[in-house]
Length: 313
Image (cartoon, rainbow, N blue to C red):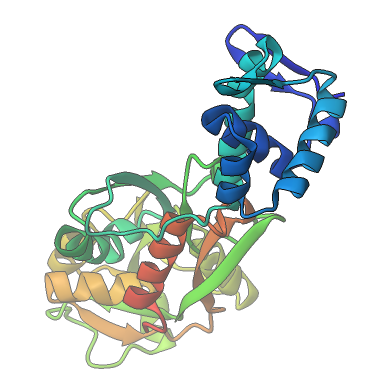
């Protein structure tokens, strides 16, 4: 027997014994039409079939549900009580079987949260925002840090994407390569001892600015350790804010992933040199949780990131 109860205005349905959807549709249509003939027409069935369905529905719900009167098939009190929950179930089934509408960036009003590195504030976000202001003016973008909570926020939906070098993300995640990264060095164009090229001896002799944050920096430190290269660190920075101005006004150099390096060089008119130290490269990827793989908005955002940054060098 189907059990339908109302607890604190919440409909609770025992779906293990729920009548078939076609029987619930019959209850709904017959309640409105009060006619077996018209119900058969609306449901595209013969009158004998409708009579059989009604018999099954009466048997399952242990009530006549509708009785013949001069005015038509009148619902019993049991039918009156069940019609509301019946329509709730039919609406839930409709939502389950209805495809999610495509995300329309031109009209959407939605906030997206992207976990990014400090460097991405300079390299990725300006380009993303430029696109959004033109193509998706109703979109609000929030930048969050990549940290130990990133996996949890992606799983919970608090964040939509993580973009960067995040090798520790665990199972349940999708990932897609956006572009590869190697390493470059930056110097002032007026540096007194560095010309068009930077060799290893000059690299070791010069003073350096070290960026302490970021997963990529661990690759740099590992490479220096393997090759027994001891840099002369003059300044440590926790991020890239101010780095371009510092390099441009001093004789210090910095070793950076290519994307942030070339971006800062263009902003501050700096020299870009091939790095004389062999450092492992890495790929910048976008990551998202499997729970949101089919979300139309998430799909659109991933497609946008791919369009803007795929195979960028």
